[in-house]
Image (cartoon, rainbow, N blue to C red):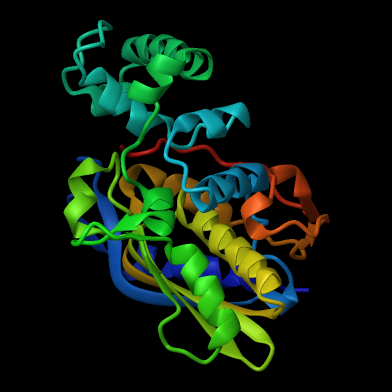
Length: 318
């Protein structure tokens, strides 16, 4: 069969390559960018883990569980060898008075382009990861990423000081008032943006019940199409499965709406390699437990029949 999930993603990549605007960006890497695009994934047809390059379900699932728990510290992720947030925590660490490593002039660019500096960075990062895993004081001080996604999902603080658990509230409201238009969770808290290691890229999502099916639409303000979007697609599809299960519903669609969807200039060759590949059939998600959403462990989840082409590496723009 033609995998509809890979096809939709490839169409987005092709469109950006063909008509994208050349733009400078915060990381000084440069992008091809399109403003405004939407993908739709029918979750009854399988799980949208892309097959034209290997995408790690373990990294996706452990990050999502981290969000669901309201956690903002690297330790949980590192216990699963999940390093996708390391650069942002490390960037904060090297700017602190505790850091005594190499000169950090033009750090981000040098890490990506300077082989000698990359070696220094790798050595320092290894020490940094080890310290977070084994030193509680260091972990509390330098492993925390600020008030990022999990904090906003589970403990949004209002102007009057009231704490709001958005995730639990949405689940309760889906059960009581399934046809409400207020099943919304926002990670974009203007009052706390400056406290975050990285302002939220996937900013707001809304659930929609039709019959016995739950759908989810995400608005993503900024989307790294090659490295980030395959993770985002799978993460919010997994979240839709988990919320539907919690509410006694089946899954409907995951709708992915983009603001600035971009391909970094140093990812173009990698994207073209992926576009040259044919897809495999989509895999299936299996959940091995009756635990509540809030008690799930990564080991309770399994991706069945996932066949893919090899991973394609590309530098991350920090």
